[in-house]
Image (tube, rainbow, N blue to C red; front, side, top):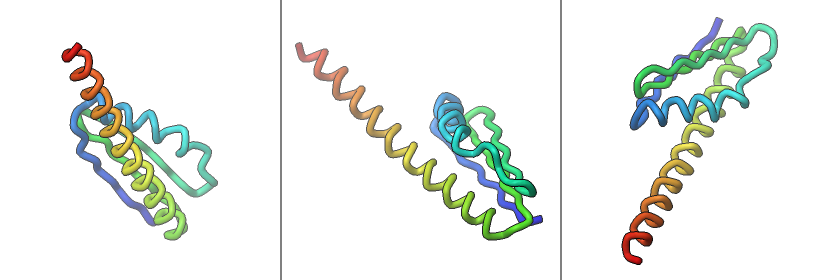
Length: 92
């Protein structure tokens, strides 16, 4: 069995839980012989990806990392937008 373990250190437990929630729907109903697990605690999110086929592990790992990167970009943009809105409200 081929496998990969990914540990993501998030900015806080809220971020780790949100990332887990966002990635979970895309990572269900795997083919037979493939295993995907996600676990979060404190500010950490861990993924375990295993398959009999190394190519499947690599493809799934790449997808998880790409989705996590996209989540980070959206999360940061959302945080910035909220900050801008708060500053604009204070100026009124």
